[in-house]
Image (cartoon, rainbow, N blue to C red; front, side):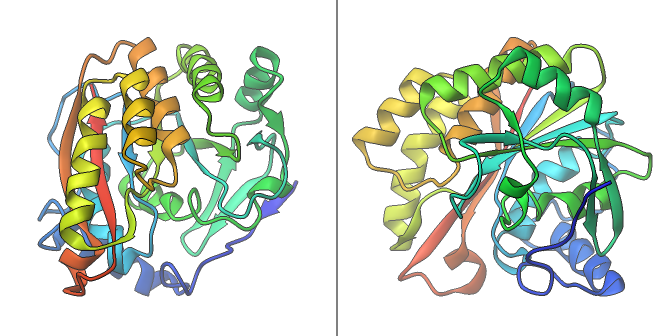
Length: 278
């Protein structure tokens, strides 16, 4: 069995187990986090979430808002979709089998579901190498391990191709494989990159509006018109399409902030949002 070892432990999050647990706890209790520890008492039927994927010191508290919202669920499967920053491997890649290792332990990849999604869409290839270096999915796994005490499996899907057509295909395929088991979908993306704080807010507000309306046509139109530098736009769109197909009717912005809000350095920031679909 292949083991996907950590690529960014010690950089994006602590590599020592106790320090990592403490760090995640701090994210939940942070001023920009939910301000309380999971599990939540929320009984809302949340189908999926959008979360950021920067280092925990920057985006962890914002991400913790989405994770708190889904912490009362007990999914059998978490499908994590994110962008391939390195551009290595396949255009669209799931993992067929193996373990995803973090300092908190191992999480099993859902082999059966990976095979099923590849049958539904041959464009979603089964490839280990595509996943070996990127952080967009990796940083989500310790958060999931910390909020869920029960055993769950993951299906990681990483994207080089983030076109609207690809997002439609991925979203529809994800919705089909999600109908047979208790599933939560996690779309991983940061928003505006390396712009002044006020400008980042303006850009991201324009892009978040169609996300909340679950309108991917408008989402791609605004993305291109305003040249919003959100890195995981295909992951966002895929998540919207899957959640909509599974019965979600609205998106809710739980928290938005920038790295500048967190650190105080506002000349060049990255935008982060926690959004839930229900």
